[in-house]
Image (cartoon, rainbow, N blue to C red; front, top):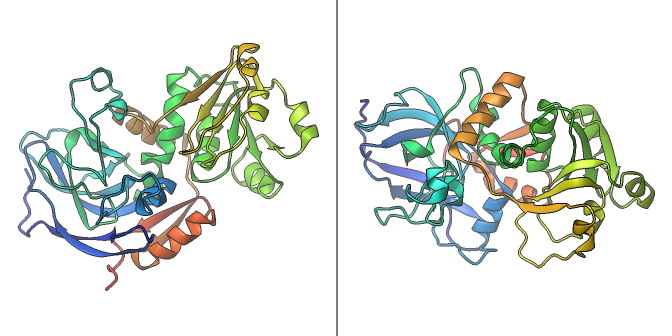
Length: 357
């Protein structure tokens, strides 16, 4: 077992109110327990859901809150019962850091659906301490909720896979949509959407990016390698595409009509919802009934699936399109993210930054 001499006081960048601004915050981590891994954070991705939490848009935020659930770091200490990790390993921590370990989802490797799951931040751990995320110098995490980064994969490339990547991969795996030759649609080309193109192409699917304007056509086809680009506001294009897709991954995080996209699905097609939308959405039932279509939800992925998507990206030599920023730029990055001004995922270089004064 490795050991560390310094105390467990760490610094993070925290939201202290709903203003959306992060500032330095010092707090204490728990000591490394028998099943814990003590991790020095190297980098952490910024997710759109971080904005929801920082600004209390879901009405559930507790302050001070250190966000970040796409954390990659180096193991600096392991507990006496930890066998999967060693000091020096490169590891990742995603959206959750605990669960009950006894319910149906937990017993079937679907712990992200446990009703007692513990979020990586903005939650309370078993010891009563608030959980704090990856915009910090270090974390202590139970080994069950730590994954190994494949050898040769950079920390910055690994980070977005811990949430955005597995969020796309998990439903394709669950709904039996991994076989090659399928025709898939990716609705919305943001952080999750661009990951959807990568995963679907890696699986050998014919991929259509669906967007509201021509703005991202060149990016989708030439940079990301999509096969087709469909403008949803163009009635002629949409009519030609009716009944052409086996599935659509809907990443749009704001309320939008579902009926135009349901019409694009084949018999037994699936519209898989990924955006966090807090207003009611409507559709007419015959659009589902007459094609035996499905509207499904999905939520991040299991620890098994996170490891699988990391290994999948390594095997297929896939890469995320990221913009690496320093800690002192994080508030500007959050402002830009709110305006969708990023290609396509911010990753914060924690280890290579000084915490702002």
